[in-house]
Structure formats: structure tokens, C-alpha cells
Length: 582
Image 1 (tube, one colour):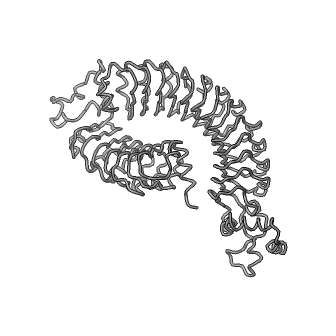
Image 2 (tube, one colour; image 1 turned 45 degrees about the vertical axis):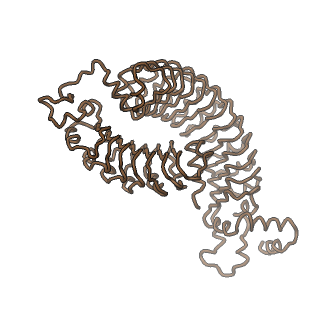
Image 3 (cartoon, one colour; image 1 turned 90 degrees about the horizontal axis):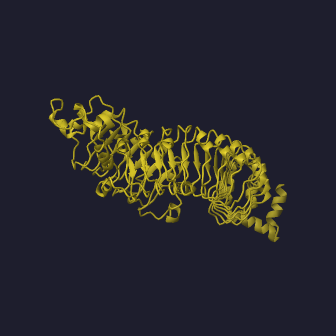
């Protein structure tokens, strides 16, 4: 074998010269040598028009160093090479893959996104160990049936292709947990999809689907279903039986009615904006015990039922651009962090109240609740039961709404009487926004066992104190419009944190967002960094795979480019991951 290779090295014929050139130029021998040891090879962004033979044959051919080295150290034992398990050839100019793909049967990860592939070779069936296949952003019109042989496949990413149908036998991919078919040309989803019983995440957005099969409800583990930007006119009633469903996206369709969700007790987010929904009834709301986000923007709703008060977990409600003329006053008793009402012909709330933001609207609605008479202990005027100092504290908010509210006072310090007023009451939210605070009150740590929501926006904070990092139940943190330039390492301990708003902080410098800190916050789903001075975004932020909303607009960095930002969070994270140095 070695003599043959020596002859090949000296042979003047063009074919052999071409092979040696593609080995030496397109793929540096150092990379191939390193890949034999690590089992991983990254050839992304090398302008490759075809995969060099030395890549396909990396585990077949005896390496050149075998002919050159007579004594071997432990690091040079070429016969102890590792089979290639991870091959990344994304961001190239590949138009096809050859059947030589079968020479890499040990692959567990094959990433070929952002090429010009129109098909996949039938040899794909030989990759029986494959767990992740990314063929997104290509020109695939059809998938080979052989792809259904990949029984160990857990992640299949086919977004941004030209697929019009799914091959027969697709349901045999019974290990599949994550399937992305978004931005294709699918008109139907086969009922056999329901046999993908391990599926946790299914993205069907931006296709041409007019309906979903009722059998989809058999996907008992499905947590995330994205059907945005299709032509759906109805949703099968069976969808209501999907017990594990947590996130449902139905934006930009042609829905006239909302489905009922009697079994979707875990549903946390329902996005149905940009449809033609006219009625929101009690039957649509009464089972949504866990709902955090309800997006009804750009529909044709005329009213909101009193039963909205049943959504006690609701934090974000978007009703903008509907035909709503009045709101139930009971809405004021919800613990909303965000309420959008723009674009409605509201007659009961003045424009200046709406312009002041969510908390002012809720306060206004609460003030209109006729039979909500304050008890003596709720009184905010001086009585025999109220200390003079407590007259400045909103006791009604503390007792009824579990909110410690001392906002919009333009104060530089939160008075002790504010914390003293809590006494034995349970407090879940703190609102100290719109003040002149230069540091976070130390006594905030007294509430570390119960507070989940802290609003410190519109202050003059230049650093985060350790007291804030002691709030172990903190899930929502609003720090926008301050003077922060970094986050302390101790924030890693806030493992329940789901949303951080850091927009409009004036001194954010390069590296002010540490991706390693963010990754330890496993529940973090929303990170708002808009309108800062970020000069670069660390690629490692792409590893924060739980982020569903990453907002970066209004910063001076050059990459990711605007064209990537408009594609949304998943595209930004994928872009960043591709740029992590290997």
C-alpha cells in the first residue's frame, strides 16, 4: 500500500496531481492529521466546490506520515487513529455529495448547511450512527427515502430548502427529538408524522400548509410546535390533547377561531398574532393555568372577557392592533410585566395613561374596580392602624397584589419604611423603577426567599450589587435605561432567571456580556441588549441554546449583519455557533 502511495506521489498524470493539490490546498494536511486524532473535522467557509477525496478516505487510506516516519512517539501512532465522528462542511459551494459518504459510517454529526445541494446521496443510509444532520439553507427539492434508515437520528435540520413533500417511511425516525422543516414549500404534513413519538420540537413555519393532521396530537412529548407563516384556517381540535405542549406558535395564518386547550396545562406561550380571530371567550382561557405569554396582536378582537383574570400566571399580553373599545377592569389585578394596547379604539382609557406604560394602565384599571373597597389595613391614608411613615407605601399593592411598589418617586434611596411595611406579607414582585437609584438597596436581600420579579429600570445604576444575586427565585429582571457596563460573576447563581432586559444602558463595552455566565442560567429565554454600545457579540453566546428571544438592534457591532438579525433568534445563535473557534 505504501509503495502505491509513493508512486502516486511521483506520478506526473494530471488526475494524481489534482488529488495532491486538493489535499494540500483546499484541506491543509495539518487539519487532516488533527482530525485523525480528535475524530472531528471542521471545513466550514473554505469555498469548497466538492469534498476532497482525502476527507472521504480519512479512515481508509494509510496516512502519508506512515511512509516518512521510522520511529513513532505516542502522538504519532497513525494506526491508533480515531474514526471521524463529526464532519462540518457548512458555508461552502457544494452542489452535491458523492456516494463516498458511505466511507464515514462512524459519523454522529454531519453539518452541511449553507451550500448549494440539490439532493443527498443514497449512501446516507450507511450512516447508522448519525445523531445530528444539518442540511439547512441548501436547495433540496426532495429527500432520499434512504434518510429514513437513520434510526439514531435525534436532530434533523432541513430549514430553508425547496422541499415540497416528505418521503414515505419518515415515521421510522423514531429517535428524532428536534425536527426543523421551516421555510420550505410543504403543502401537507403526513398523518404518519404522529409516530415520531420522541419528538420534542417541531418547526413547520413558513410553508404552505392549509391544515394539520389531527393525529399530530399523538406526539405526547412535543413541547414546541411552530406553525407560523402558513395558510392554516383551522386547528384540529385534537391539538388540545397535547399534554406536554409548552410553546405554540400560530402567527401569520388565516385562523378565524382560537382552539380550546383543555389538556394543555403546561402551555406557557401562545402566539396567534396576525390572524383573523374575532372572538376571545372564557372557554379559550379557562384551562391555560400556566400561560406566561399570550400574543393576540393584529387580529379582529372586539372585546376581552372578564375571565382573563383566570390567567394568574400571565406576564405578557399583547392586544395591539385589534378592534377593542373597552377592557375589563379585572385585568388590573393580573401581575403583568408587559401589556400592549396600541392600535385599538379604546374609549375607557385615556391615551396619556396608555403612554405611561403597563404598570400605570394596570393601576388605572384597579382604581376603577367598583367593589374593590379597601379594608382598614389596605388604607394608604393615616389612620390609627397605620404608622405615619407607612402613608407613603402602597399597602394595597403589598397585601392584594404581592407587589412592593416604590416607583416613579425620583428618589436616590428607598426608605426603610418601604421594607418595614412588608412585615409578614408575601412579596413576589419589586418595582423600584423611575427613580434616581445609584445602587441597589441592600435590604432587597431580605426578600430573597420569595421575590421572582424585579424592575429597576430607569435609574442610575452603574453596577449590580451582590444582594440582587441572592434572590434565588428571580425569574424576570428589568435593568433597562441605566448606566451598567458589566454583570457580576455572582449572577451565575440566578439559575431560575428567564428574562433579562439590558436595553438602553449607555456604557456597555466589549465583553460586557459573558456568554459563560449566560450559559449557566439554563432557564434564560429572553435577553434584551438593544441600544447599547456593544462593539462585538461573543460567538460563544451561540451556545445559549435555550434563548428564544435575543434582541441586539441598535448596537454599533458589524457582525452579525442586519440580514442575520432580521432572521430571528435561532438564526443569530446558529450564526454565532458557526464562528466559535475550534
